[in-house]
Image 1 (tube, helix red, strand yellow):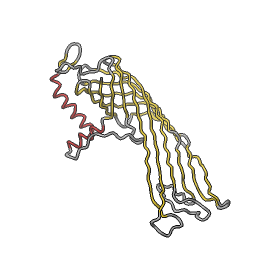
Image 2: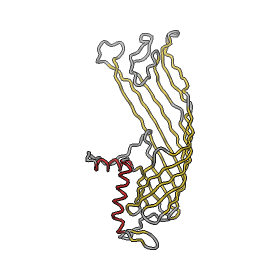
Image 3: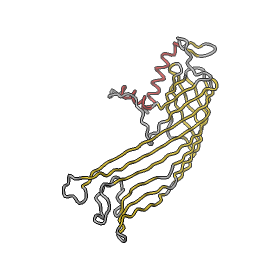
Image 4: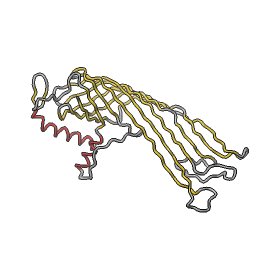
Length: 282
């Protein structure tokens, strides 16, 4: 709700300066003669407007405001979009999403065989994720003023990976069959320890139709919002888990690998959330 309120505020403020525009028979230009709307041959770069609205909300709310920042993670794979204008009301659209993260957590446990509690070894849990997407489509617009209606269709492909890796300072041995280790998130299986969990590759496909509005608050600078409807398919392949335990029968370390199941999903529905972009034309 706050995001929509801020968008409306931007539109209202922009209308207050629209009286300075000169609407010639050929095109809409600013008081200084700069074209406001995109033209044939123009390119655009669009970025997620959320950080800017967060910043504006902090200013309006009287909170400490920090400069807009962009966090690129697998969980938050912010989208970059682009356009190539075929004519004033038609454009090819492309979209690119990139999310990568590599996190490492450490813990220290007393070294086995030591009586001094200050003699410790390090256990680590590393998690790496990746989410990459690429999309293309066609956009049409209607209107001759600053406010334009936009509509069109897009298709998007995405690929993602997810892996957890564990390393332990205290090792299994014939004299240490129950090593002292850190249970980070269920990696302690009681009589065994997880060494690695590698999820299957995630694959996604979307084919959507979208509709929205785009408002040009300055020459070739706009804020746009849109909603979409379409079909989506996603799947996650089988993964595997590597587990370490002590083999009492053979008096040796045993390492085994087991498969983890995948999943698939098909949807045909309106997207639950819209997309807000800040667009730069050049």
